[in-house]
Image 1 (spheres, one colour):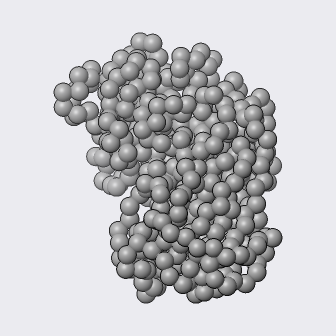
Image 2 (cartoon, helix red, strand yellow; image 1 turned 180 degrees about the vertical axis):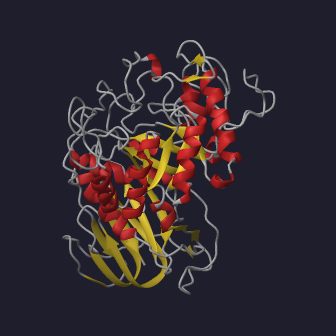
Length: 496
């Protein structure tokens, strides 16, 4: 849920369920919905396609890929297709798709397993985060069997019980990760005869996280399963028990011993709505910035310089490479401070892309389905029908779908001249060797940017997709060496 105690906000009333809260902070926007279209032009001849796209002429110079991002191994593409000898190394399309996650409330009885699995499959999301409860294991297994769902299971504050749940899930191939306690700044942890407090001590949180990590790593049946840190625990710890680290380094001065191992991945709740509730330009990119000390609860304030008491953690350079996930982020579409469904749909595509490009291994949007009690945060409405965000994600994941196992990606020599600060790009490659260059703009406040992609040499066929219009190419171009797209607030995919 949105962090209620960040910047010393009043703590929410006690809640019966880990993720249930009716009094969450709303995430506001003062900007109207935008519906900027996508226009495409080619450096050489092209054939018209759908989507009202114009064909023109342009050229470009410049360097490829202005954004820093994940680095994949170089080599050849799948299916015997070889990329360019030099250029930007692609990332497996499957790696990006496998980073997509969503929070649901099957354990709470709010979300039914069958319709939830169907909804997730439609959106192309296969990672589910849910409260840990042994009674829910059969429901999760049924979701895995029907839709390939993998579960990030939150601890129920019982180490043996959590390991048991994880073992059952992993035996069926249905386990993604084990996660520590949820937001101890909002939900106290009772462990080893002591209860944590936001203004007293987080020793129970630290001991539970330590013991959970050790138990998972000691279980042969859970070999290779990652452990996610307790969410918000580092930033909100009232005493320095070292929760701002994955493993406490030497001479850290924490109350827990040096070398205490907590997790494999840092875990943030960097809600894209932030604390100022403004749908500003570059909002998803900034929310995902690991070194930014601003409006979002990102890695810097959780693991670099903690926001509650200012304890020192990792350096900026270490935060960039720190293994990290976000297990909650989102923006609601009804109620105080809501953005429109159209804005949410465009934003969420940018959010998943920005988080992956900035090094988040997994991103879980809160939440799968609207709920009148917990809020209208969903990708789907209360009847499990897709909202605009669910439809746009379906389109994007369909365009990028790659059924193959994922070969070593190759390189593509492309360039984007004078890439504006709100424009970002991510080069993906499918198993058959097809490159999918995703280019997105973050200007929800209005306006557009004409971006020219130089392809290095003449390319026989280039398809341009706009996920806001469907899954078919908006334009098919032939024998082109440049493609110009006019972007506003969502991604397009240039496939070749």
